[in-house]
Length: 168
Image 1 (cartoon, rainbow, N blue to C red):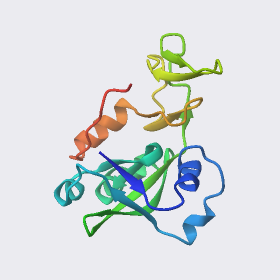
Image 2: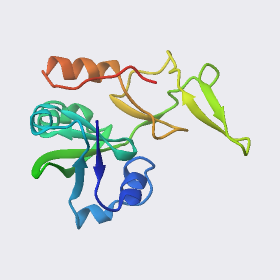
Image 3: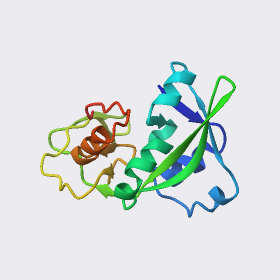
């Protein structure tokens, strides 16, 4: 279940995922997103992570209170309001600052387009990735976001409610 940004989606994705622009627009607006089907008031009040459109991670204030100092070199947080059926919930959109070569390009599978170019279809992640990050994007496929084992352990030990999925 995702949340979709209400306005300026392209500009928001460009800044948060592709690191284009300086983000000055965030000084003048509060990000607004709408929870899609499957979210309820209860799930949004309890969860500590929601996926935003375009692969933008949204974290609860609890997450930032518990993990913010440990992750501040990996993520820059910006206030975001998530609307669900007439009620607003405070989250923080995360601009991922770390990029790594996470995908094993020789073992992953690709789909060939009619023009001959290829897009990543199923990623196999490298096993020799350094452990000096908590959250990073794939350098060549920025829409791919990977939480390190260290972040998963930190979230678990802090009692945060995040459902980590196997990377695909």
